Image (cartoon, rainbow over all chains, first blue to last red):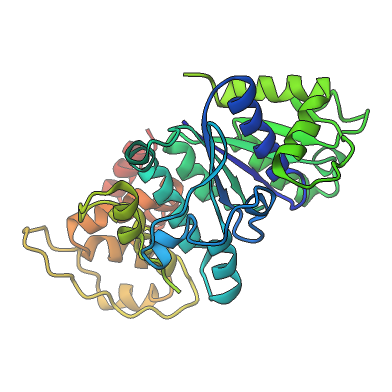
Length: 231
Length: 123
């Protein structure tokens, strides 16, 4: 079971939602999970999790090194993405190369987790605006797509933007609208309300802050039920 | 910069299977061939027939006038590429192409046999 969290725009809360989903699955439902930080632009989840620098998800394809899996807490692990973020800055990559590496992860994940005693269920945090063709291929491999947006998704910025959103909505298994205004609450199937930013920007503090809100907790529960059901 | 997809997937799965990840690693080949064939303005060199151990029917020959007139015709180039490629490569390319694109390429020729083929394709 693999869930991929993606978006059209940056800064909409993909990483926060991925962390909240993983936390709720592992801690509240006792459902272990492996997070993969495939946000090759920022590797923010690796930073929030205070993962050590070292070989991450791209290293098997880049240097032939085994990725160093970071234990976030019992039942929750992370394959960091520093290597990909650094490579993205340093080398002249075609996006298709990174997409292929991520697709190879989807193919190789069952064997990888089984051989290392890791949870077989994974949540992948990604970079914005992954190409539709790539997402379609992943869906064909059984990956559930969670598309995250903010109020821009329901504000009709322009016809072009509306068409772009429509294309991603069509592909997604679930659409989550983050930081919803009162107006948007009824327009989206899953909504996350704004919560006070925790002082400690650690993944667990962020996830707890989201889930502490009763509405958000219900959203995350419903979302997990749909795309990450307990085996 | 290119990544070593096969080596990576062999490391992830722990299997030294030479076929592992081949389909993913070869994605570009299909996309590039399709992309090259669908570029109308770019001059395309004639595609030489690739060696293949399996016998295959010869590609339908084009007359000189047809070839000249269609030099920049992406549909013609696509069909010629598919017809001259070994069958397994052609199958792979067809699998990578959108059905609509192939249909549009075939629609460019008024031919009763092609019309029947199109009907089958659109069924």
